[in-house]
Structures are given as C-alpha cells and as structure tokens.
Length: 199
Length: 199
Image (cartoon, rainbow over all chains, first blue to last red; front, side):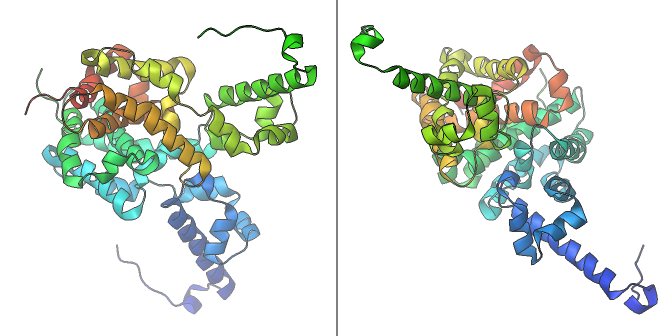
C-alpha cells in the first residue's frame, strides 16, 4: 500500500502536534544511537536529552521513564533480518561474519544487547521477549529436523558468546585475527547446530 | 609455609582495628553475595551496606567507591579453577556441565560476569584484565598446537554465550532441556577448539 502525502493543513495537524512528533522522533533516534554504542546501564536520560536537544523532563513526559523509552528502541528486528539473510547451508558462515563485522565496524553488534538485559524489571522482560520472537524463533523456523528450537538457541548462543568476547571481554588474540580466519574456525560450530551431521 | 597463630593481645592489635577488619570483610562478603545474583549495574551501595549491616558512607571510607569495591571482589580465580578442573580430553564436557550447573544451582555463573563488564571506566578494565589472566590465558596454557591463545578465547566464548542464553536471555528450549543432553550437543563444539581434529 502506498501512503498518500497530505499537507499539514489538509490533515488538520497543528504545528504544535507536528513539533511533538518531531521531538519524539529525535528522542528515539538519540536513544537508538547511544544504545548501539554503549551498554544501556551506562546511558543516562541526560545523555539522551543532550543528543536530542531537549530537556530530560520532556523525555519523561513523552516516554514515562528510561526503561519504557529504551524498550521502544530495543528491537532486534532489523538486525535479525540481516543476521539471517543467507541460505541455510551457508548461514553459519554468514552469521559469524555478520557478528564480527558489526563489532569491528559499529563497535557493538545489536544482538549482543541481550547479554546486557537487566535480570529484573520490565525492560529486561521486553528485551527477552523481543529476542525470542525476533531472533531465536525466526531462526528455528528456518531449520528442519528434530529439536529445531533448541538447536537455534544453541547456535545463537555461540554467536552471542563470540560477540561478548570481541566487544566486551576484548580478548587480544580474537581482536588481532582476520575475520576470515575466525569465520573458518568458528562457523562449523554454528553450522553443526543448523544442519547437524547424521549421527 | 605455615602461619603461626598469635593472640590479638600478643600481636598488639587493638579491638578497634579488629572491628575495622571484620567490617571490611563483611562488606566484601556482602558485595560478593550480591554480585553472584545480580548484574553489578543493578546493585547499589545501599544494597551492599544493608546486607553488611553498615552505613553506605562507611563503605566509601573503606573502599573509595562502588567501582573499586567491586573490583576487589570481581575475581574469576576461584571459578576458573573449578571450570578448568578436568583432563584436557574431557575438558569440553566438564566446562559445559560446570556452566550449566552453576546457572541452575546458583542462578548465575561467575564466568558470565565478563558479559556485564562496563565498556568504559576502571571497573570494566579491571574485570577484563582479570578475565584474561585468570581464565583465557590459564586455559591457553593447557593447550598444545598452534594458535592456543585464540582457540582458548573461542572455547571460552562458546561457554559465555551458553551462559548468557541460559541466565540472561533465558530461552525456553535450553532452560527445559536436561543438562546431560546439552552437554552431549554442545561439548563437541568446545572440545573442537581445545583439541582440534587434524585437518
């Protein structure tokens, strides 16, 4: 479906309402930017406000609190689409490369945000639910054979661990290795869960 | 070397000094207890103080700030010893079982704390340095053949990822599976890094 562009006057929108929507969008964009570069625990409302050019109380007015604001932008959907974008026989290599390239090019891969999910409270629960429906269950739907759900979770686990070692533990041998070399070594572990060899 | 026990009177220790040491020990014990059950970002000085039965300012007096207090107790040493306590040919199975049993019995395995390490600041740097010297380098020292350092990091990565999926993402199929079944499936991935099959 195409959307029809209407002028603000025709739609009856007031300038104040347009301003509010633009401000909300700026706040979400700011939160999204910071979340791809820092652990959410390290980000303050003041950081988000400064980057968006608004006051912290305005963020509270529009989004309630930091938890509900972050829940809005903590979706794995866009990343999961890129992560899973390869035919099944090559998916292990693709996913390992995707994690490493996200880390080295963007500083942190979005998948790794699940490792920072708070253990208590609403924000963690939203992240966990998003992670399951958008990542592990999407992958499980691609797999054939028994225990697809478990195998998908274990495959994603290897990727989250690789991302944590690269981006958080920052271990020296991994950081110094060529991406191709890591893909060659690590992708077979992932692929063994996706398309297990016959026993 | 044996240590010779001396009476407080003989050593010249004052009761006040003994009290201070006991208080410091209680604070460290409280911090250690909370850190095995919560992400450090979720723990406040007030939590530590309440559990230790002291005031938050007393913690600041003895330990400077929350970061330096936590750095004192965020050692991987005790856990690394238990994690690596198996002959090399069985080490993959042992490590996978250790991570899963720590998770299911204690709520969080200590190894997983590396995934919560802050990306900036002194606390994260101390955690990263401890993790390397106490975990990945200890494991690398046990391995033979080329690229032992990288293989140790990748093996530990698979374990950190498994722990994150179990303890943080809390994915349902993994949580519902028997530990023996997960060990059978996952240990070969770990062992392939420890004792790689000849190419």
